[in-house]
Every structure is written in structure tokens, then in C-alpha cells.
Length: 291
Image (cartoon, rainbow, N blue to C red; front, side, top):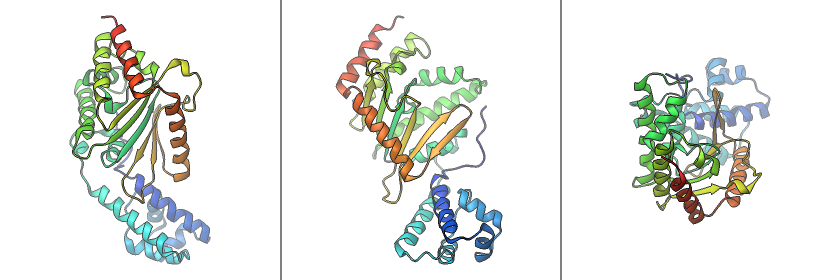
């Protein structure tokens, strides 16, 4: 079974908050040791705070802001709001804990409270749109998952995630998928045909927007690799980009950098087929699969 990388539960906002305080400290010419002395803590704790590993107390944030010479009341208020939101999310025990989501726990925690997800996929159907058999076939092909019980847990987590698409406050999903993902026969033709039917069905939901980037589009901005952009309803929350690469996970948490991913996604979406034409291509590929 693949083990989670450390005790990381929804720390994206914590790392953003820590990054802001680290930036303010550097601008003020202060060291972590000096900051630690101001809040009666150790330099190690300050390092953990700035890395997002521990929640931050409001009094510590106020003291540090004063120590760093921050006089902008709106900036301080924004940091306090972000700290409160981060603490609330750390306390929350989502459904994924009981299913042992492993290394996916942090991503699922973000997805579970997101208002919108935009995802670009080169060779796979997005997880939120997969059938159980398709997800199972992917897990079986992954060398990390050897135990059948572990594989079924992976499938259960993926199926549970999809409940957000049909909930009272549904997640808005915009998926742009390469034609290659539709033609890669994961699990064989029978599994793949059912997967394409499922994809077609979900694309009819009012909160699900599916586009296919056809082969004939040629080069495009997102050709380097897949990623997802997670958006939140809170005004103070910026979009977060997430990528799985071999052996690790990459998070892009700054507003400037995530905006680049957003522009690339939008440009690739414009090169893709319209939803109706995408649905027709999905149907055509599914009908052409040989049993």
C-alpha cells in the first residue's frame, strides 16, 4: 500500500499563510530566531509555522505583524481570516479519513470544500468522472497497489468523491480531456465502453462541462502534462493548482503562478471541441470499440 507523505491534512491554506508571514519577515529584515523570541517560541516552531505544518494563533499573528512593521489593517485582517479558515479545516474530519485515502487525503480535503474544479487530462479520464471498473483497472496496473483490499479502498475513495457532483451544493467541474484519454483502452474494450457511456452521461449534468481536445488540434499550451485547478467560494482564497508526477505531488499556491495555469487551461479549452461536439466524439469512439 502506498503510504501518505507525513501528517498532511488540508495544509494548503496553512502554507499560504506561512508563506505570507515569511515574506513579511524577510522584508523587515528579521530572522526566524528573532520572530521566535517575540512570540516566546522556538525557531523550529516558527519554521513549522512558515511551512504550514502547524496552525497559527491570532495573538501570534498580531505580534509578528507588529514586529515586522505591518501597518496595513486590511492585510492583518486578511491574515487573521485565513488563519481562522485554516484552523477550521484542520479540525474537520471528512469522510476520507475513515476510508484511509492515503497520499490523496490533502487533495480530497481541498476538493471537498471547493466550489469549482478545472482539470486537464492527457491520457486518463478525470477521477471525478471514472467508473469503478476503470478506477480498479488503473489501480491494478499501479505497482504500489498489490493487496486487493487496498485496491478496493482506492476505488471506494474515488467513487465517494463523485458524490459532490450530485450534492445539494454541487461541485462545478470543467474537464478538458485529450482524445488520447478516450482511446486508451484501460481495462479492455468492455470496461472502456462503459466508461465512455458514463462520461457521456455525466456530461449532461448542468454543473459538469466536458470538452475533448481532438488530435487534429496539434500543439497546445498544456501539452507538457495534466493538472487540476481548485477554486473556493471564500473571497480570500486563491486558486490552487495540483499536479501528480511520478513519485510526488506538486502544489502551486501563489496567486500569480496559479493564474498562469488558469490562462493555459482557458487557451487549451478554446482549442477543444464544444460540449455537443465533444459528446458526439465520445459516442463515436465508444461505438467503435470491439468486444
